[in-house]
Amino acid sequence: MNINIIVAVAQNRAIGYRNQLLYSYHEDLQRFKSLTIGHTIIMGRKTYQSLPNGALPNRRNIVVTRQSIQIPNCDIAHSIQEALELCNNEDEVFIIGGAEIYRQTLPIANRLYLTLIKDTPNKADTYFPDYSQWKIVHQEEHDFFYFEELIPPKSMTSTSSPSSSDISGASRGNSTIGS
Image (cartoon, rainbow, N blue to C red; front, top):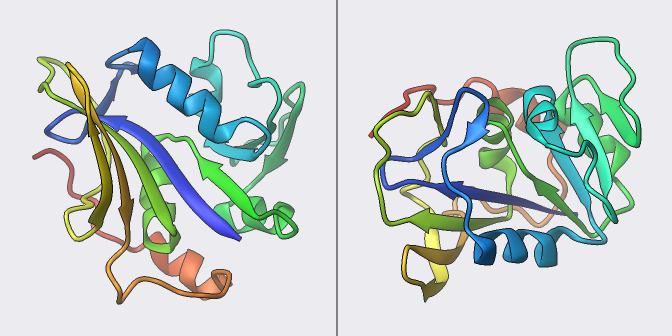
């Protein structure tokens, strides 16, 4: 299974403020849709709650939460490991946020689809983890952002699915935020 992360980040790795995205560009939303449609998306509860219309259509939605809740049109998982186990027959899954879910999955991801905004916001309270060791394999420049595709450093890549020790170890990663 390929574990893909998709995210829009500012130059200081900011991704949100008060549970909302910092930027909204039509081209970025179209790219998100074209990449994720027909695939499973995994998100945290707060990311789900930030979606204006609930579960995203034409995708399997999995929400990771510690709470015992039911969410219409979504599968519930109580850990990243459980979410990935629900996807074990899938070729591609997309991690769509938020910050804690990104932090736990970056060490096990195969690809990062990044929209790098050519800006640093005045206000942000949520940041993407450090991805500076990842290698850009494709970059497309637009007026206000870059679309980038990155792969992990060789030491992180694996041809097999992540083990439970890989996933639990991910939670011990660097939690420093900011630039």
